Length: 202
Image (tube, rainbow, N blue to C red; front, side, top):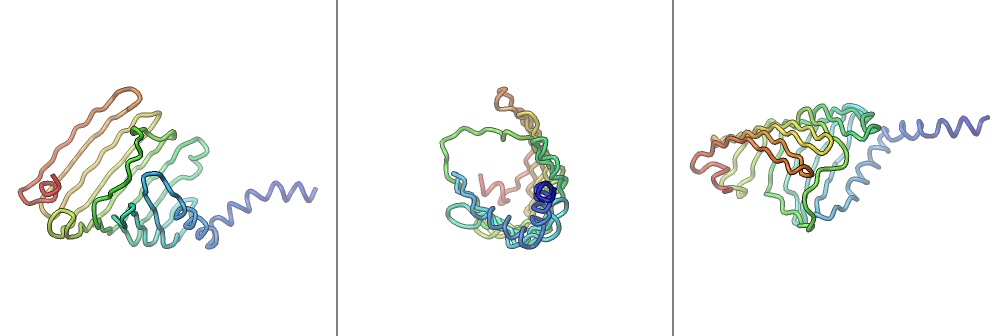
């Protein structure tokens, strides 16, 4: 009887331990060990809060094979992990007050055609309030903001985004794409003043 109780309790104890300081460090180490073919690396300083609801990712850094291209000191995530039981990643919000784009990412080419993931994804809000765009990315240093929401369901992606910069640039887009069904509808508006960020990139 005791053995049966231990076996039944073990998964619940493991879940509790995973949301401890030691469990958070394990998650951070496992993420750092990921080696996707395109060379993307994800580094997190530490995780605060609860991984089963609202958490804060401290010192988040995204890197390509040549180094860090995006960093954020404090990223807040509010998500519903239970949705994963139905093969769905459900994120209510993923926000950062500040972040820095150090350079444009240069990921490796994998030779594979683009495909949507095999699970559904909902991002209610992805937001960066103040995005510092480092000098050299596209001319002098600039600041901007980014807002995005996305819903990927059954092989169809619906994305609605808005980006602005201190140079007067503004990009809005609405994307409705289903690669397996040869569907790609894109509505976009771009305001790109002379000498602005998008003008330099183009």
